[in-house]
Length: 186
Image (cartoon, rainbow, N blue to C red; front, side, top):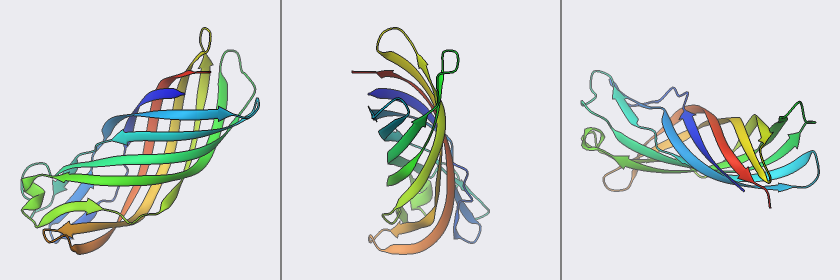
């Protein structure tokens, strides 16, 4: 069982809502928890849930001034982890798996002025890869340093005031998540 803090850096092309009105996501701190099942000395599985809230940034000649709000991103991930042999005091590992991204948005008046009440995405999974280090501490405690790459190249739906999808745009988010935390082994 582990808890961690994370920093999310979305590498995104953003989307154009209309000519001269561009929307991108900013960086965001977040938090999360993981449950790891160790099958043997080299193989384990890990379920992670985390949360980050990047700002919706508005730009362009037709964009109203101010922030567009925030998007709550909650990725749920299942990974297989392969650990190498201990090197001095650290145990390096690589991991890969799938992730499912839950999205909810809080739209501020600057974005709502263009008729947008929310952003959402279609439901499907994406791949995730990562690498990290486990650093044994005293007793059952371990420190974890982790970097994961979560590419979400998919459609984003712009929802209007009547709840109808106004526009479907491709948004290319290549999130790099850097996390550090502590684990307790039962």
